Image (tube, rainbow, N blue to C red):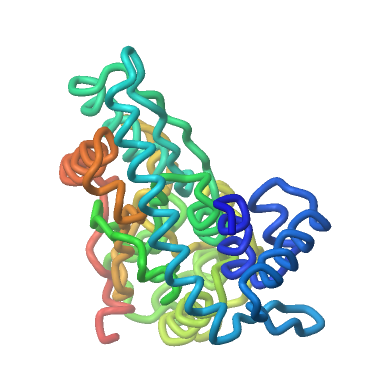
Length: 318
């Protein structure tokens, strides 16, 4: 049993397929299949039940997966710890995050980190939550910054560091005032009513998408979807052009420290988006990773949200 085999086994166990595991590791699929077959022969038992489209762990495989996590974590902890003894080398921190988090939180955190570890290099990946988790499992990221509602229960083995609370807001084209509107159908003229009833929706994961749709049904029962996007920034660009409204996290409206999309943001009754830094537990105890987690929290506390209007009357009863 080799360390290389265990890395492959861990990736396949997480990905549940050779195809996805090969992408995570950057290795050819036939090589992965051969290594798993050799590992099973060496340990003398079957580790996976092979269905047509999925690889599921056997009881023996589940046992080995728990032990493999400990082995990989121990080796990584030793590796990152030894970097401290390498003269002139402080290592690289690979961080994955959504674009809005990367541009609003990470620069301030890096500025703070540089005062303590000036030689650290950051490798920043702007990724969707699912991809960030895959990169974390395949050990190609040290830290993934995600919303808690996008973290699967299978990610509970990672350490979570709370960083920032980001409220969900309703982005409305500038010039349409909802501050005194109780009923969209009765209190707005036809042009404004048409805009408010037109929604631009970010293509969330299924669970959160249903939550947003249910919210729209309660607040704007006559709404229609005029567009779906893969980024919040595109949704906000469409709102800015007066094409409709969108529910977005407040931070996504910040283009930079001193600029934002030209839209009006109203607080909503939706639960806030809680952003955490997800990392293998061994990094919590080793520098410079431990320090970076600390400065991420400091940057989160110093973060300034864009101007937010109070919850308008049309949604206060929710």
